[in-house]
Length: 153
Image (tube, rainbow, N blue to C red; front, side, top):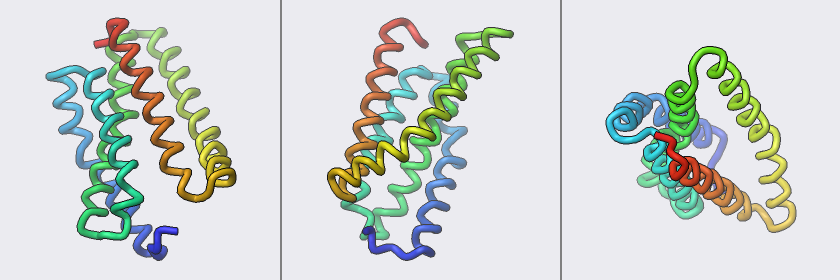
């Protein structure tokens, strides 16, 4: 385990949520001026890198709290930037259909992610959770790159 007690885990989650909330506007502002798809790809890579660092930094509060803030900012931005891209690409009834598809995809991830992580942990031990989710984030990144090459803004 991480060695953190329930109170520390609660603080860790709170810092993660704070990162998600505080950085929505700056990330959106940058995406509006640069590239929404580019920012989505960047936030995916930042999420992957911050998650990959977690096993090494979890025991050091000096690094854990900034990492949680960064992870909250980057992972939280994936949802928001994706919605912004939907709004940019679709209008009217098409936007409603696209949003429905997006919500279905999100909910499928919510349903499939925990069993995938749990299975990895069962087969390969607790340490397999982070690499499994890093691999899923990398697949997400590859999809974003492919969409960008197809002309997504």
